[in-house]
Length: 283
Ligand code: NAD
Image (tube, rainbow, N blue to C red):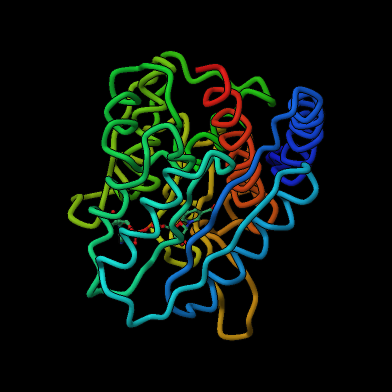
């Protein structure tokens, strides 16, 4: 039976450490603060924003929420980002995705000041990650790296297979694993004979958004399995991309859903806000 990687617990510990750092900053007269921009009323996004505000409160980080109408024009969104870029009291800016289709999310991400890009989506920060330089690492891959570190699971020389190549998870995750000296294969919807890749993997990371997609027969005995997926079943239950009950029988370590990658993503966002507040004030 696999050991469970308890993301909830690691996230709690991370928040406690960050709370101390936040108190230190406050003693120096710096009040870490970030802004979240929510466009429209996507119910899942509202839940994410609520969870982020809860974590911020726990750490002692200040938080401003901007809820924009779904019909907003691109220029209004850009103008808000520019205003927030100029605000000295705001250290981080987060644009909650998805945003409505008529808006250009890439232009919006590019507009966020590089030093306030707590989600790590600005092309400059994406490039820095690819070059192995210090940067804001996007929160989900960063959280996964921290969890592995906490459980002393080294990626060096390991065959890592990532399923999913999105800009927010799969691609930055690939860079993070490369930076840890893993041999990385990135699979996606056009990959042929996926099982041939997953069967050879020492570590499998799944981020596709398909309930119970990774089944036991696709996993090598003793592999480490990281489940990024968040899916809701018809009964309203939250499940990942991994068939947890079956895969845990042969994996060495596995992350549950809920309570695995999700809480770490939010904890690393808080980490990035503290980092931004420190960096902006040291300039
Ligand atoms: P996305 O929809 O942007 O991309 C999905 C990726 O999966 C694509 O690259 C696609 O090629 C690949 N894919 C789809 N079907 C496939 C198949 N049959 N075989 C192989 N590859 C396939 O997804 P995303 O934004 O990266 O999110 C993925 C999942 O992770 C979703 O469930 C999302 O809710 C979840 N997520 C969780 C967190 C967290 O904090 N836990 C953060 C971000 C995303």
